[in-house]
Image (tube, rainbow, N blue to C red):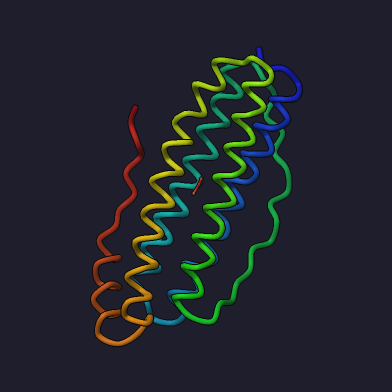
Length: 168
Ligand code: FEO
């Protein structure tokens, strides 16, 4: 059984993951508006990944006999300067999520809830991967200054991304 503190914190993280999904969906729509349909697809996959993250925690709370309390999702921004601006925001957001996951893990350690510490390990690894992927993409976008034929090529590549639900 989850204690109250952890139940509350995990519920907060469900909300944060749904906010991430919402943010990336908003970015996906913006990228579509500026005719970067490949990056729009990439961001839509990101949206699906975040929903998966939220549901993974949702299922865990239920599995541990906790109560899921869904809260309102904050309104995301809907306008950026350009594609570089979008990806700078993605990296900043993922760094913020990493901090949330680390804080949550600290709390689970403090509460001596070993099962939750173990559960959160998946998210710790996932954040390393997310930050690395976004940093790489951002570096490539910076290399081509977010324009020209380089952008066309990266956009075409981004179109190939597909959501594959992770298996353990
Ligand atoms: Fe759910 Fe992108 O972290």
